[in-house]
Image 1 (cartoon, rainbow, N blue to C red):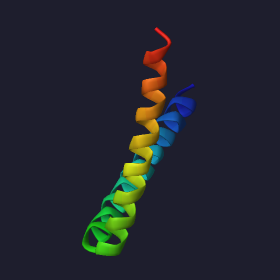
Image 2: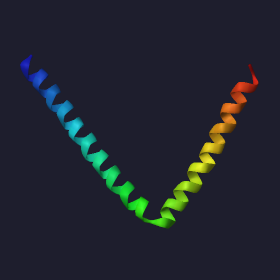
Image 3: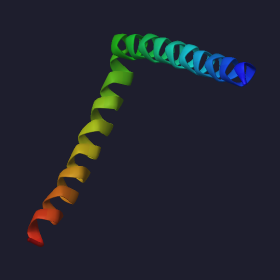
Image 4: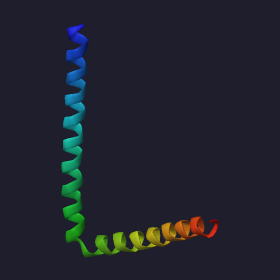
Length: 65
């Protein structure tokens, strides 16, 4: 039984390590994007479009009350 528990602990540790590394890569990529005006402009444009789309969905939900 102890080996199963130890294996489970190792799996959790490996998954945690993977998440930490993934988070670090995400932060590093975000810094690169923030320093690139063209990429930031594209991100901003997409964010605005998605925000408008979500606002439209939220508004539809309130109309049916």
